[in-house]
Length: 159
Image: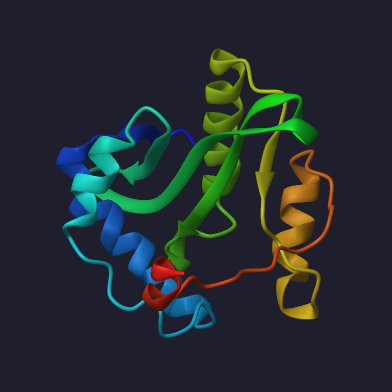
């Protein structure tokens, strides 16, 4: 889409990023109570991780219509540094208009600049996520399986 532009978001746009990620989490409805509301103080943590954690916004004019966050990590299975797309959300009225593909092009360009060998994204294998998985596959991603999570509790810190 020529009239939608994807750019890297700075900390000055953190409120927009947090708002869109909150909308994603509300739509998913499955991350659990531990996620809670996204605290604006997350911007301090983002700032301290800004070399490894990036956010991109899609804009149509002055309106933010989507967000993608991606982190750089290191994994032996990936032969070194790689990227992990943590969140990607497009507001409903802009879906199926090429915004997701623009985000993935931005992720691939970032990966090429940083010398990554791989970009991972979670798309669980279930009927609910079939459309999402097919979208990523059309963009060249290969399905390798869902992820699992383990929540660390504050009590475990003292063990």
